[in-house]
Length: 55
Image (cartoon, rainbow, N blue to C red; front, side, top):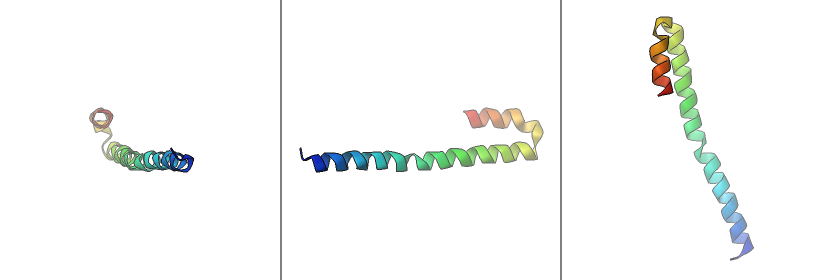
């Protein structure tokens, strides 16, 4: 196999994995932020919010 194609394939795979991990990271950060906001508004619901955010 051509070494240039091999190198390009490795670089493309690395970029694909890196870019694909951005979406879930943003989603988890948003979910955690919303959980913290909910706990700040209603401290008595902390156990319920924590249980749901972990699951």
